[in-house]
Image 1 (cartoon, rainbow, N blue to C red):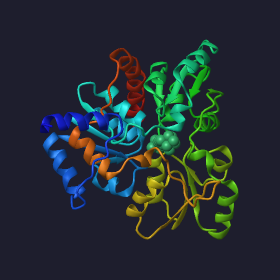
Image 2: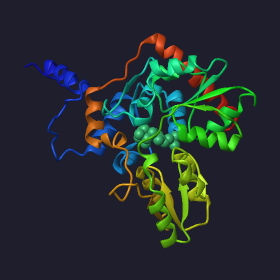
Image 3: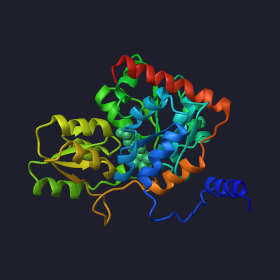
Length: 336
Ligand code: 13P
Ligand code: SF4
């Protein structure tokens, strides 16, 4: 087989998620990724839920809003997205002319999957006169059916951009929706979706932890269920939680979100203690199986072979772009 044919064959395998190339164990993946970034004018964007090694080699680490804002303004030719599919898809919606690659095409999201566009379209038809606010954790198909997108850091500002009497459908996360209803005094209709990571925290185990660590503050992501949020000392997006640990004077925190964020919390606060909130199963902490599909090896391979690539129908992209632009504008006005 010619070298070029081999590359094409490997590309096909990788696109289908079957690339299983034996990498030389002596290969310095950090160095190789840095080399590929320069050679290909690529930017590596990573979510806080990625493993520490990936966070350490990323050009930007952030929450969903920060990542979308970086994707919007980058001048790189290739965006390498170390996150899940809806995040890379959002980057592609904002950058039709750039190549967007994701280390593992199978890195999905239970929350996004809980809201299939055909069912949501029917749900929308059953609620005439409502506008649709969708959490960014959804497919391009749902975005295209929405009036505006939000993330956990701007959901309040986005919802409050509508008059108080405006009827609103909020999708797909019922927990974030219920939390925003509470803080805004609205009565949005909620789609019945949830995140598999945030809905399995154990109230009983967290309560016991609080007894054992009386000075620890409980900080929680708004994707958590109401009983957890009720006893939290602070509720916020991943960036919000991280910033809180940097400005608050406590020395100990119980962290109710995916454990990846602890890496940045520990880096930013060397003297403080961070305890992952336990889930309602036999594990001590709570990882997102989708986020954790990405590895340093897969990042290197997807940069080298420029695949798997995110592609999208142009009509769908244009329809999905409008509500994202509206979100970015509201965030800018709100200084977020
Ligand atoms: P944020 O990064 O916006 O806080 O969202 C968390 C999350 O679950 C992303 O999948
Ligand atoms: Fe989806 Fe939850 Fe994983 Fe985020 S943590 S990607 S919302 S399953």
